[in-house]
Image 1 (cartoon, rainbow, N blue to C red):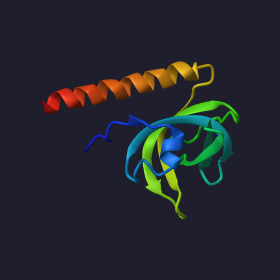
Image 2: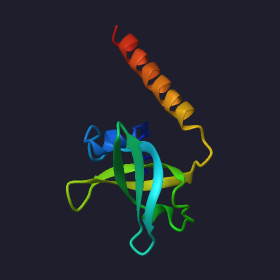
Image 3: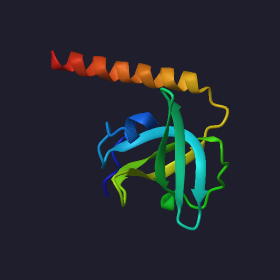
Image 4: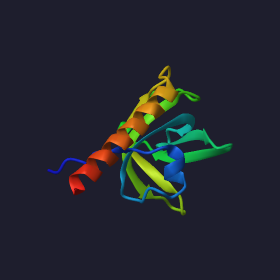
Length: 125
């Protein structure tokens, strides 16, 4: 049995804009704006550059969970093509992160990206 691929942090707006291809394993976060337990579907939302971005999440693998609408959630899973042109995150982890300092989280993501980029550049030389 193969383990799933490691998840890269991707901002929700990067996923929705199409910068992240279908089939990628990602880690992202956003505010839980809706949840339909009958269809195992949720929507995470994030504000960026004066625009509201929404990502549909399949919650089949994390059921049952007690959603807190309006709270921030960290999601880890694989991106799949949905019925329309939108990507759907098939979540295998969905944790409430209410109370987390989001600016520190973003700083950590940026530092991790910078480190991986430097490591990749140094291994090429």
